[in-house]
Every structure is written in C-alpha cells, then in structure tokens.
Image (spheres, rainbow, N blue to C red):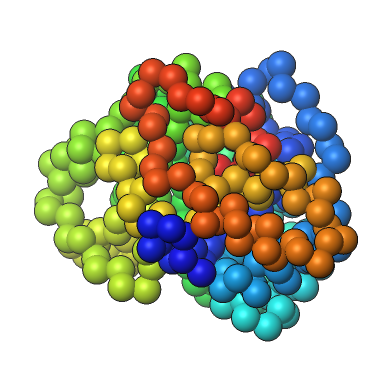
Length: 318
Ligand code: SAM
Ligand code: SF4
C-alpha cells in the first residue's frame, strides 16, 4: 500500500524479543532491563497475515537477539509459508546462529545480517562485552561454505572506536561474496550519546584504499542503503546514512516492537499497540490507518520534537 506521501510500504521489521546476550555499547546500556513479554509465535503470525493483506511482502526478523527464542525457526518457517510473502530475512549477533544455518538454508531464508563492528578480537569484546569473535567469524565462514546467499555484515560507525576496522572489513568482500553494510549511528536510546562518523568520510577512506567505488543501481529495492562494488571484489559494500543522507522520501518500512507497538518512523514513539487489537476484525484497517499517517520524515537534525521515541534499539530492533 501507499502512504499519503505516495511511498510504497512493503517492508516490516519485527522485533521478536528485547532480550540480548550481548551488551553493545551503543545499543544496550546496563540500566535497561528486559521486559521479556514479547509477542508470541501466534501473535507474530497473525500480524504477518494482516501485513500481507496490506501488500507488505518483505519481513525482517530482529530483536534483541532473535536466536534467544527457542521457537525462532518455527516462526521463520511459518512466515515463509504465508501466501504473499516474498522475502524473510533476519538480523542477528551471530552467537547462536551456527547451529541453525542448515535449517535456515532448508527453510529458504532470504538473507542474514550479522552484526560485526570489529574484526579485532579485543575491540569486538570491548564493544559487545562478549569474548566470542572467533565463534562469530567461523559462523560467517560456514555461511559461505554452505553457499548461503545474501549474507550481510552490519558495521555501525562508532566514532572514536572502530574506524580502524572499516578497511579491514571491506577487504573481506575481495575474498567472500558477502556485503559489508556500514550504518551511521542513529540517535536512538544510548546512540544519542555518540558522535556521527559520516558516510562521506567513510567513502573517502575506502576510495583512498581501494580506488573508486562504483554505485550499483538497485532497481528492486527502495530501501535506504546505497551499494557499491570495488575492483576485484566478489561481494559489495553498502552504506546507510539516515542522518547525513536522509532517505525518508524513499522509506518503505514500518517497525513492530517486541511488545507489539507499531512504529511508522524510527524517531517517533508508537501510537498504537497492535497486541491490544489482536482479536479484532479491524486489525488490518488499524495498521492501514497508521501507515497512511506515517510521518513525512524524521527530524533527527532538530534539537527536540514532539512525541520523540524513548525506547532503546534493543526493543525496537534497529
Ligand atoms: N541483536 C541483533 C544484531 O545485533 O544484529 C539484532 C538487533 S540489533 C538492534 C539490529 C541492528 O541495529 C544491529 O546491526 C545493530 O548494530 C544496529 N543498531 C543498534 N543500535 C544502533 C544505533 N544506535 N544506530 C545504528 N544502528 C544500531
Ligand atoms: Fe544485542 Fe544486537 Fe543490541 Fe548488540 S546490537 S546489544 S547484539 S540487540
């Protein structure tokens, strides 16, 4: 369906838990406690059935850490089997992913994003508070051995922290058919306390090292990332710059938090909790009305706005 600014909304990000086994510095501050009252398997399915009716065909499973749910594979399988769903992908920190890869391949998962903000073991630990870089990297290699497609490594640009990792990460696309997706820090939750490292700086850093990046035309997606190839690369790099490259005019997404709130823009708090309307015949209509009223754009560059989101990313799902 289209919102009132003629944007086609076909993508929903669903946070299936606010629990996490990592404590990334920019996402999960010590004082945030899990409410752990996440949407149930059947609630998630019911929401997806209603989203499909509205033309939403791409679902991203996120969290918290989705693999902390024991029913996560069943959830993905059931969403994949819904008529009208074209794509189900997942974002994970990778810690529990390794043992599920074969199942995910069998189900036909359409893509996996694994968060890797550093290839340096100690820095990885400093950012995540879990000393498990080798395990994560073995899992990434296993995705390649299994021939899994659309594997992306998410790297958040943490100014003053992981700049030395950007070139190292980009080198991986010479070796593997994966995508390194660099994400500007978003001022949500504790992310507000960080400074921006801009994509302009990043692009210059990569081009100084590897030569010109060639933009790939991405006709199939009106998503926010810009993708590039590099000379001699098997994979590609992607950049998402919500702040310095505002892409609200191309926004194709809504978000559902782990508690069932419907968010039509990352910056604003939700007005509706879908969980309360789960048994209503008007659930799809309710979602339609919210989509129609999706804000025209975020205002992250303004000092304060009405109705600003106070939740942390771990609840929202990135
Ligand atoms: N736990 C999973 C993971 O880390 O991939 C999924 C949930 S996590 C909230 C989803 C994505 O949001 C991750 O790639 C994470 O790095 C990113 N993220 C978290 N806080 C962010 C922020 N303030 N700005 C930009 N990206 C953020
Ligand atoms: Fe957990 Fe992902 Fe947030 Fe890190 S980014 S604390 S892994 S939810």
